[in-house]
Structures are given as C-alpha cells and as structure tokens.
View 1 (tube, helix red, strand yellow):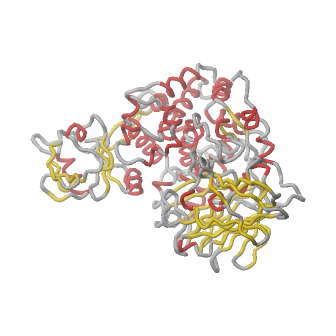
View 2: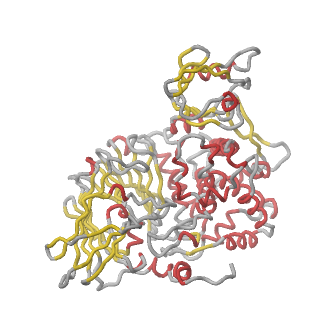
View 3: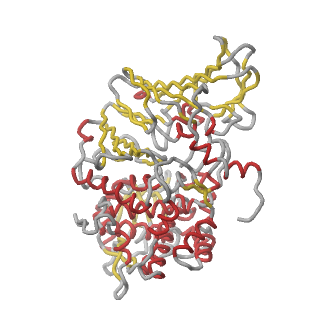
Length: 631
C-alpha cells in the first residue's frame, strides 16, 4: 500500500527481520529463567527469574498476545505467588491500573539484579492443557516476565528446566548441559525462547525421520504409557513422506532442524500450536500404534508443519509486533490459517496419511459444515478474521448463526478455488504449488520473518496466472452469501453429494469430536448423551423450536441413544412416519414434532462427468507419483 507509515509501523515492518534473526550478544548478561516442573503431575510449575537491573523504576510484562493463538491469550489468571526481591530484601510491586499484564516496581539503590519468583497454576486451565500424571508441556511465555523498553528480539534469556526424576525432555532450543533431572538450554532471545516450547514426560521416544543429513527432522513422542510410543512402519513412512512433500511444495526449508513435539494422551485435549522449528501437538494415545486410530486427526501435524513457512517465515504484517503486548491485526487470517488448512490437507493426502478417498471425504465434510454456517447471511468471512481475538469459537450454542473461526475451513474452499482456477488458466502448466515456491521459497536454512500484505498475495497470484484475483478475493471476503463457495469443487471435477451412510472417515472424525452431527439432515448437532450442542437456522429442528442447551431424552417414545436416533432418522423416509422427540429444557419436559422426512444424509464428493479431475491431481504425491493411495 502506498501510504505513510508511523514510527511503530516502520519498527514492525523493517527492522523486525533482523531482530528476529539476531544472535545473542556474546558478552551480554541474559535474564536467567529457572523453571521447576517437578510437581507437574500436581499441575503447578515454579519459576525463578534473575534480571540484570539498574536502580530505579522498572516495569515487567507478562506476555499477553501469544503468537499462533491470535488473541490476548496469555494465562494471567493462572499466575500466582509473584514475589520480587533485590539483595535479599523484598521489593514491593504493583499491578498497572489499566493493563493487568504489567507490573511496576522500583529497583533499590545499589542493586544490580532483581529476582522474581512466580508459579503457574494448571488446575483451572482449559484450552490446550499442560500436564497429566506422566506428561508436561512447558510453554515459556506462561512462566516468565520480561522488561519493558526493548523489542523481544533484543532481550536475551537463558532457561533451565527441572523435571520429575527419570523424565525426558525435547525442545528446538539448543541444550547446553543436562545434569540429573535438570536441563540447561543455550542463550537465545525472547522471541526464540517463546517460539520453542519444551515437551517432557515419563515415557519418551525420539524418532529420526528420513535419511541422515541436514536439516534433521524428528518425531518427539511422550505418552501416558510405553505401549503408546510404538509407531507402525506405515505411519513412520508417511511422516517421512510428509517432510519430502513439503520440501517439494515450498522449494526451501527456513529452519536449521525441525521437531514435531507430540503428546499422545486421552487425558489431554487434542491441540496444535505452530512454531518455526517445532510444533506443539496433541493427539489421542494410540494415534501412532494403529494405522486407523489417528485418521480423524491425521491433518494435525501437516497443518502445523506448513505454518513453519506460512505464519512463521512469511507472516502478515499486522501480526508482527515489537513485543507481546501490542494488539494484532488479524485481517489476513484467511491466508495465515486458511491457506495453511488447505495446504495441510493437500500434504496429508500427498504424504499418504490419508488416501485420496479419505482426503475427498474430509473436503466433503468441510464443505457441508461451511454450507451450514448460516451466519454467512449477515456476516462476511473477513469479519470472522477481525474478531478472532474474541475466541468466539469457544462460545456455546448457536454457533452456526454466530459464525466464528470460518477463516480456517472456508479459507480451504477459497484456496481450492484459486488452485483449480490457476490450473485452468494455465492449462495445467502452473498451480498453487507454483505460487508457494515463489512466495515461500528462496534461500533455506535461515530462521527469519518476512512480512506480507493483501497486495503481495494478489501480485504473486497474478505473476503465476494473470487474472482479476483482487476482485475474486474481495467478493469472497467481504460479501455475504446464502451458500459456501463451492467453485473449487466444480472446477476440480467434483461436486458435493449425499449418501444414506457415513464414510469411514466421517465416523472417525465424529468419534474424535464426540458428537452426533445431523446438520445435513434435520439440522442438529448433539453430544453422545443427547445434549443439543447446536441447531442450524432454517432446518427442521430449528422450525420445530429446538435450541442449544436442551437435551433429547427419547425418540418416538424410546429412550435416547445414538442407535435409536439413527434408526428413527432412516425410518423418517417412510410415508406417514413421525419423528417425535421428548426434550428436557431445564426443569421442563416437552415433546417436539420434527417435520423431516429425508432420511440420513452424509456428505461426500462425486465426479462431474466430462470435467477434468483436477482435484485428484492436486492431492496426488509429487515426490512419489506412483505411491499407493489405497489402504
């Protein structure tokens, strides 16, 4: 954009790359951070920091805007036991009147260091989860303070970690020494520290992916049991293929080595958070020991891996700030997350973690879910990116009408449309792969950050295949609509259809989510015990008067169960067959008549006759074209 930039904007856009990549000053005294996670099974971490300090006023920040979470998600409510002292004497502190993440103190005369002690409490934590009896994830931003006045790339830290006896640790941080249960990491700047979580556990296994050479890639696994650390030869081969396919897609790797830090547990929620040289991932306990157990979440590691290029190496300018306290501009999350979701899906198929059929089934489920996001009638997609910091996807009920983090899945549909359009315009000579090599390629092996804007995206798309991309993207981002954008499927030779039985992939995905999704039919999403999680506006359940928070107790006079519900749904196609639900709403019980007679409906893709099958070309392996995709 041709406009004047403020001094803050210039700081964000110009010097940031140098700061992010700046090596620690050899003689500078770093801030010491000692984390004691030996009580991790009790869900408490203890931390001690030693700050080089000059006498006088000092403001310390607790990190607020955490990269990758797209919001002010620093868990300040879980900070406890905060104490400060200098030369053995207590230093009083005061929280800022307005900014709850800022703490003010005065370093006394004669003091040259300030010691800070704090605890992180995990008992009340939701979200990603932190610990179990056998597992701990240390996200450094949660256990530290840092001084006001310098960019995070110019503040050096040296961290150490104490673990329970016999636990092992993995991190992208350089390890300087290990003595017993304590690991001392090398000196890095604050940005690198926060970007390099530590994974620890009683049961740990490191798996090298691919042949010897640089850069090295690892699966670091911690599990609730030794048995869960086993990995089938097929799954290991697929992750090795993932590394090869990503290199072919982007043309360069912008890291020195890479670690997939994976918790395997049914006691922690599945999760993923990207970092430049690692990813913080959580999967069900048996995901690696059974070729089918992890199918529903097989996209997770490919998605977070793509973020090393899209989000870490190339990042929207609005998400680059000098510290963790400034608000982010999240307008380009449809690129940051939407393109990552699309490329993660492509790489999941190309690596063999999904067959072509499973990848198509995933896309069909995604398309139908987006079609049922009825909030698109009042709220354009771009608005969902701007409200990402509200964490609206955590809201309960009426989610289809609210519309929340659709920039992930609808972003997938938009980038599929772009990919197939490029292939059509260039008669198959170019594709979104071409864009990726241009935009994310270059010299590899250097950890750096390069900002981009909407105009940069449009310019690079035009360089690949001239078209009015700006107009297309503006329509997709700013206009309301009755239906999800489906052009990518039709251009790719497929269309959304429905069958009366779920695919194996859909069963796996719904099992992972622990829900019964009847959105395509009567318009309900239920928990396994009949709790109504969401109702789709305009569909039969909505017209009958049902709402989130109610609970289905019986169907056609029979006690609720998923099996009874499915039988009644199938029978609804028979002439004269009623669909009657006994529903509890607080202390009130009521019977609802559902005017639905379409039977079970489950999304899938079917071929469009006479249309080139571009979708299969997109999902096919690039490095091993003959690789078997069938189970």
